[in-house]
Amino acid sequence: MTSTYPPLLSELQNTIDAKGFAHIADLRAHLSGTDYGENAFRAHWDILVLDENFKSYTTRHRRILRYHYTHPGKFERNEDSDYVPTVTYDVDYTQGINRLTYATPEFIDDPLTADILRTDISLIAPRLKDGGEYMIDVDLFRVSSEDGKASPTTSGRHQDGQDWLFMHFVAAENNRPVVSEIAECPDAAHPLFEKPMTGFLETLCVNDRKLWHAANAVEQLDPSKPARRDLLLVSVTRKPAAAPGSAAE
Image (cartoon, rainbow, N blue to C red; front, side, top):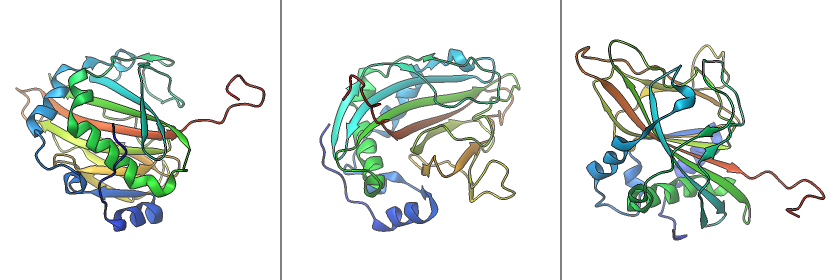
């Protein structure tokens, strides 16, 4: 992956600095390419794998792609698909290591995947340290519902223990509106932002250390047909400093 970033409106970076989040109606306006295959990109979500750790709580399918990132511009693939959460959630799920399935080569090599990552990083570049080392997780999520059973999208208002989150809407079918919201704290009376994301690559960028986020469950609009919601979640987190006397020094 190259280190050339597409140009971005400085207003978006200013908004992120001032509010801790930004809503982007269509990320494609800030991508370096214009002729990507939208349908081909969406097709990557048709071959996701059941998230076993959360199957008691929701119907969610998932794959993961990971990078070690040194700012500015150096991406190195991390092939470890065992995800170790840094927070716990107050829902019925299996805690501990989540042994996920890695993304397909077709998704990894999709030029739109690379462009989204470059654009995400450039959005928060002023907040990243030159020479700083970061972990990037790219999660493909599909939450689905059928037989009248709602599937929670999140565990209520929460933080994921990351530094930055990018929530990119990909697709939905036959679902009631799923409202994404951002709040200052878990019990805030009114969110800072709330809106159903419906457009391809409609995006939320969120400071996960500062703010809380949530989305309501996926439910069928037509009870005779399954419902689904596809999302691309990109998280960026600074690597912890090595302990004194450790082998990493």
